[in-house]
Length: 78
Image (tube, rainbow, N blue to C red; front, top):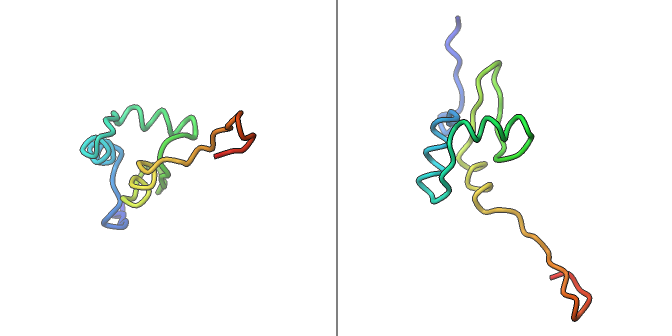
């Protein structure tokens, strides 16, 4: 089988799990696998059957998504 080359910043599922855990978001690699099946969690790429995460995608995941909250007193989303 040919040696697959990928971006050096790309991480395996196990490496991504460690990376997230070291940054205060403890998550098992098996949880990342389940999230992928459910189309949740951080962005990833697949090369044939191998899965990779990029550092920027994991950092973006850790930043979260802004959520607007309805204020019943003003009637506005904030």
